[in-house]
Image 1 (tube, rainbow, N blue to C red):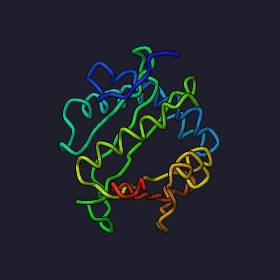
Image 2: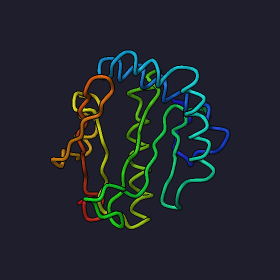
Image 3: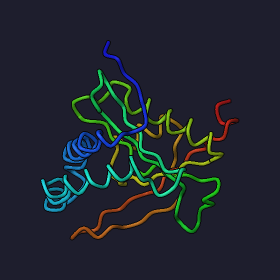
Image 4: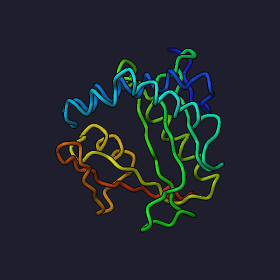
Length: 183
């Protein structure tokens, strides 16, 4: 088995993180987003923008409670997760965090990287005294909903519609990450 793990992202990881994002979106969102939108957000110009944003997230996050983690297998970045305090006005930012994204390269899917990223994220958030974790998912994204559902996530009743030339609906999921939640 390859040497696998999760660690904080470094500046040198930014291009690999952007590459994972683009491949994961092209694969996972191909039936969820309008084709022209998907092409735009995964094209070469967008990939460079993502690389710059992930470099900034790794080196100058908006706060000490914002983090970018990478999953590695044999020193190759195969997935990543980003989190920070929840920003929606209906949530308590002191106790609620948002899983901004969690993506695994489709070439390395179903090897436990997503679960390791999620566990590391929860561990760090608990250290920061968060008790609830939320995330937004496309309503029709059964793969992500099933993955998170198996980890105890459920819809919290909040939804939003994104205008991408056609309406795309997202739902917010939540889970209890307080220490007592493990049993």
